Length: 244
Image (cartoon, rainbow, N blue to C red; front, top):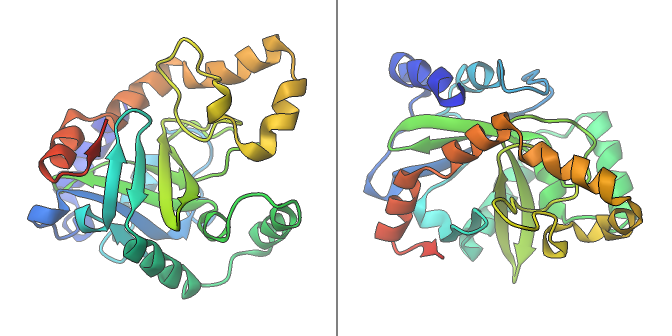
């Protein structure tokens, strides 16, 4: 359902096809628009058509193979190079100011010591992933503690040794910083966001199970398969970026 909506746009909308080369078989395009001014809503129904309706060539930042330090296939995490992290921060500093609602939210998170400056700047920003010139899936950047019931792909932002890390999830699974499926214990404590560990510990097992189930729905499983595209694995392995 998800990918079949993308394919017609990929072949019929020339303006949205970014230029690719041998080193850009995989691109994660961060758009200038966010979830709110694109009116993406919460479900995947119209999300893709709205994402691919914009001119993807006019993106805010493009993450290609040259910008990727490694791609962890186990938890589907992309680590950017140090230079790409700096370039992304610079691009975001030139982006127009966030709307008041996002600014106030980020101020609250900063006062609580939640997240990083990069995570705040990317909050709700839209993205599209292009594989071999074909826009394949997209969604928004969203922190683990968000209460928005987003049922399309989201990216969590982390920082490791000064490098940005993008964790790809098929849908928003509250509290989780990365996609822990499949796993006998998808709510592994290592996946719980640091700022949410106290609240998580206080929840009943029934409530925890209900939260985790959002990542096990049929829709989530279908989107997970789209993200875990075998072509991506091949591209990353060939480029020497794959981390198992």
